[in-house]
Image (cartoon, rainbow, N blue to C red; front, side, top):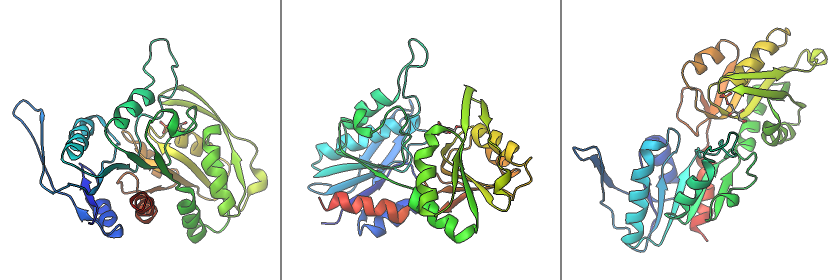
Length: 294
Ligand code: R5P
């Protein structure tokens, strides 16, 4: 029987592409709010003995989490064979340490919650920094799809002499991989974060890279301060107009507009946004097919 893919409040185009690429069937759910704003959810597809994919993209996650729990729990109760959560962006990974006494280390309780309801997690480049592997916070198997081959292909097609720059030490894991795949140089910068919107970037001397196009790569663009602070410094050096590439473009407030003034901004399609230029659907559907074939 064909697998069922349920789109829970997420990108309908990507849901359709994934359903087609895995030769699945769109699952039907009826969802609304009761007058008291609690969630009503009903599954209108027969999920008995079927492999079920819950496609729920967990950016701006809080409103999606209860429907996700209700859907996964009901699928299980109605006899689904196995259930995977597919979220191109995995939330709550950046609060991966108790920075101040009493703080919640969000990644841990969130991982525990999701692990209670689904059998598999499939995502794209989660923010693994102080947590080195999803197994440290999820008690279920996970598959991580890498965006670096997709970014490298895009750069190879669009930029002739890139110099890759990673804004901080965490970015090295992506930047090095992309640069190696694109057979091009890379430099990792130093970042000090003083607050949510206050970062300091130290740039080395880049004179020897005249003629190269600076390509800044990071996993998440949120407030955009990391990218913006770096770009403002790069643009004083008289190099080519830079590119700013993010795996996950969250773009809080005016971040996108501010970045566009400094660089060409490109993101992968993990979060629907006008900057999306790098397709993720086939990499994601390959991962889903691998899980289905197990
Ligand atoms: C954090 O270390 C990440 O890799 C990004 O650099 C960070 O999330 C970017 O955040 P913002 O856009 O708010 O500076």
